[in-house]
Image 1 (cartoon, rainbow, N blue to C red):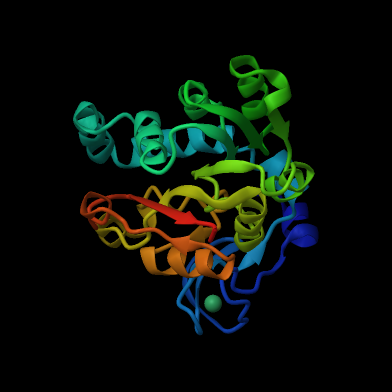
Image 2: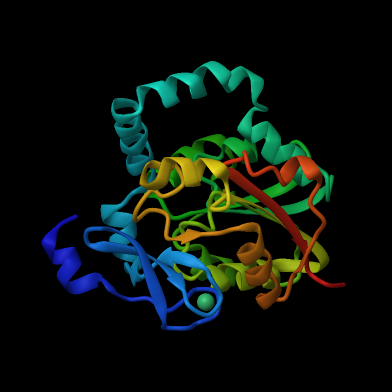
Length: 270
Ligand SMILES: [Zn+2]
């Protein structure tokens, strides 16, 4: 983090769920503070970075690799166990697809924060896909894997506004909303794009997970400041309702506190 960024581009951030200014500081990692809203208990980074700074100085693809390598140095046993147990866990992109197919099996799909398009490669067997990615590197890889005109590069909240309203059957957001400095604007953008009765499917780190409690600030969901919103099932359902969605029932397998990932789907009322 350079001193110039701190001095010129960081500003105080109101609660991204309810807009309140009162908060309790839970943790500090200079220059950032993780805070809990005094009104709704949403947990988030209490200061804000502008989009261009985020794209230029905090490219997600770089930060993700760096964070993984730091965890490996710091917590070799956790990383080793995670690696050993990996074959037992469902393949992440496969799980994204199965979570999506639970609610829709064909039609048009927009993916917010498509990363390197790993999910879209699978999804395009079922859907006519469009991806939006802020990271220039992610967008570049995506254009090589999916038809280039189907990949939009830049902030989701700006680019989704260029797509036609009421025109998508599904909006997927896998590992997007925790990065979005204006998550309610991101959800409203998804709501606008969806046809009435359309579904959004979300995956984000689970702040209510046991792992977060046990590992404290070493929890893999923090990623300060790439991640700036830390949702529990309750706060995610609440922000979805505020954006006009009806959260859908979650199967018991998705509700285990042992899971670092929070999966949730919600419908735009018909
Ligand atoms: Zn709040």
